[in-house]
Length: 180
Image (cartoon, rainbow, N blue to C red):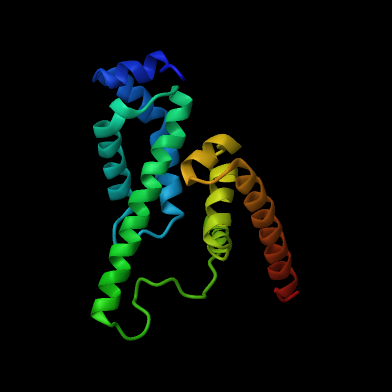
């Protein structure tokens, strides 16, 4: 059985300094990751807030180190984001909307590198997009990514390889398609 490290043990006891340390270590990466995922009508900030609330409620059942905490926290966020997407899909289905909404991303390209990267990532299948984001953008290791996405380490490696290959091919295609 894995024992908790001092930070996690203190957070379990309600130590605000321990919670602050965990928050500082993971909050910005969590928010960045949530911004790469579609979450229906809920903002990434709202889902991140909900994630921290759920983590605070369920910390007593968590066992591991502060490094293990990242995978557990991102798993909570993944589930909350999936729930938000399902709620939005049900609302969209009930509303029977016609045509694309003003908030749907269009095909137009932007000049910003961040927008270009986001647009390329959005073309990947969901699993590959999530894995590439965790590994390349958030600098998570394979084990933490596997825990966060609830998939095996082998599936992480395969999705990472495939996602990077697709991104390389798409980047080359875009580069050769641009007028000289």
